[in-house]
Length: 208
Ligand SMILES: [Mg+2]
Image 1 (cartoon, protein in one colour):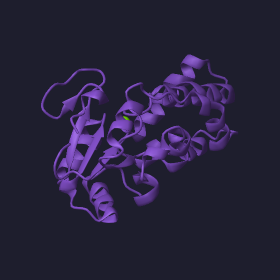
Image 2: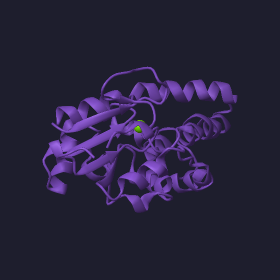
Image 3: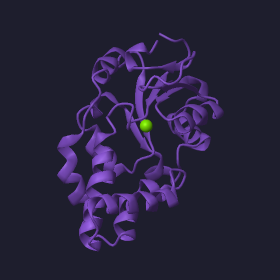
Image 4: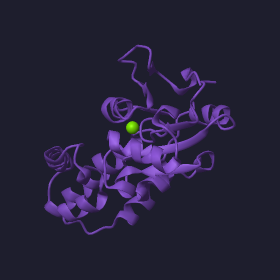
């Protein structure tokens, strides 16, 4: 157990649940709907969709908001319809539940994500009970995962940033941003591209 740490924060996508769910929605479902609407092949529609996503990019909040894209592409569907179609496809990484079981009595566990809350609820259904709080920084603060987001979370929890450790799979949003806020961070690199003191390759390597 690490002294000083009271709160362990986890990212969700790519950290606790596989990205396959996102890929099915963003790379399969939306391009299929767009292709049907515009009379494009799936391949053409996918290339077009990706080029539209890239014009916005992950540093813009619109990137994460399904309703933005449904409007942008003028699709005849709703967020709820798409989510309910894919809800059963959420896949939890096998190291998640054992890790949460091990940590739950020692720390306050929270979730910190940049995905809108509607998405979050579908993804965390099976392990929500482990977490005392879940923060969707987009829905709750109208922010991405910036140092300010992490500071706001510490304020809400009434802890110093040094009492929080965040674990996630995005170098900028999950490692650099919490460090800049004065919190601790561990980079989860499931693809094993990086190594170092604050890098782990699966959650069972967490020394907490
Ligand atoms: Mg992630």
